Amino acid sequence: MNIESLSRILKIGLLLVLQVLIFNQINLFHIATPYPYIVLLFLFPLSLSPTKRVIYSGLLALLLDAFSGTKGLHTASFTLIAFLSIYLQRPFIDMDSDPKASFFRASSKKGILFLLFLEIILHHFVFFFLDGLSLFDIHYFLLRFLSSSLLSILVALLFALFMGDRLKRN
Picture 1 (tube, rainbow, N blue to C red):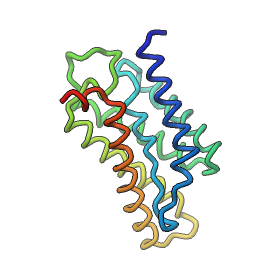
Picture 2: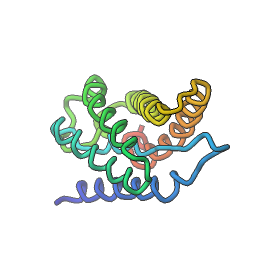
Picture 3: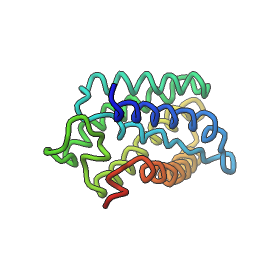
Picture 4: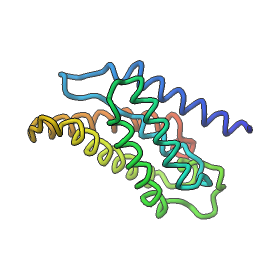
């Protein structure tokens, strides 16, 4: 195991611990909760096969569900976004980059920011749609979806700046 793999594992572990211990406890006005753990999708190496990427994402989300008490909501939404991100990230990846590098190092700043925004929006739509299926109220759904998305985007951008070497250099 090299230094980069160890660093990646520590970043993933830190982000999961922060999500469970800190971000799950934030509930602004009983509506907005940040879910910046979507940044995890940008930490996987480019050489990771799509099947392994979806399986690892599902296992990480299952772990998050177990500690958050969300009964599969994170697993369903994060696994779907992990599957979609395989196809969403391809156009933004520099083909000359190292296959062991993460998406942060292999794409442009604009690509990272656009995909971060898009993946958070998709994740939150699925998450809050599944959460609100039993007692569906469109106004409450939209309020939670939009406010949590904005809060998550802000927090995820901070994580992306902290964890992404490309964003620091450019």
